[in-house]
Image 1 (cartoon, helix red, strand yellow):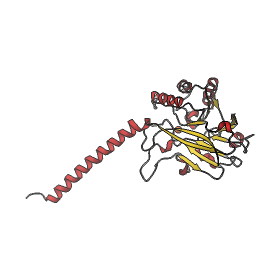
Image 2 (tube, helix red, strand yellow):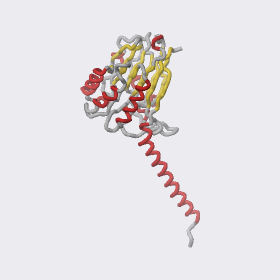
Image 3 (cartoon, rainbow, N blue to C red):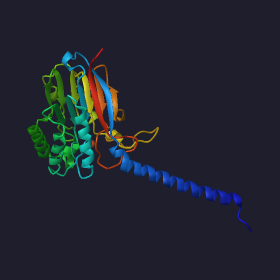
Image 4 (tube, rainbow, N blue to C red):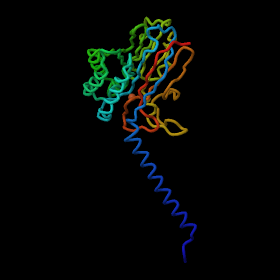
Length: 288
Ligand SMILES: [Fe+2]
């Protein structure tokens, strides 16, 4: 008895569909592993600020976040990324944490060599810590102190619940929430709401904590890596924050504050899909 031709056709179709699915999954996996983690996008946008002094109009501020210097992230890729930032010749570079993924201080020399490529004597560079800078269990406060001290000797400003001035612009830097060190009230001590400001915090959920009441201006953050992998129509399945609105990009919080969450340069696992790494270049403009 000859086999039922409908069953044979169905078997052939399923076999062929299985092969195609495996091939597409293989190509997507290869792309997410080998290509997109280093497919750097330069995002350019305006940053309108109220009461901006004339001398600051048109100045360019680069935002970097989540560099994750480590054995996992290709150092040559990070060097190329920092060289690209140097070529952009920004006036200010703001880095919102997770400079490294480390057990202790072993990655600090590699972090320093990256920042050296930005010519800290030529521009204002400011960093704040992220949870990974505190190493295991987010508890090694001495490592962050050592990292920031060595960056400071190079001319890089480290802010931990502190505020500084750049030509009439207030830069406010928060310490890391997961380390129990976030304190926006201390960071905003002597802050003047009548003058322009940019705040830096690693974890974007912290914009909802008490203490920001008088603040008006931009807040730069990271931590999410944009989700690292996104699915069409669904978004990122895994996000390490509570408020999914803060996954990536610009979020208008209210009349006074605008949040920008960068997708980051590095990764903790080498995989990115529909969420490429990012260097953000802001141009300061007078708010209408
Ligand atoms: Fe990170």
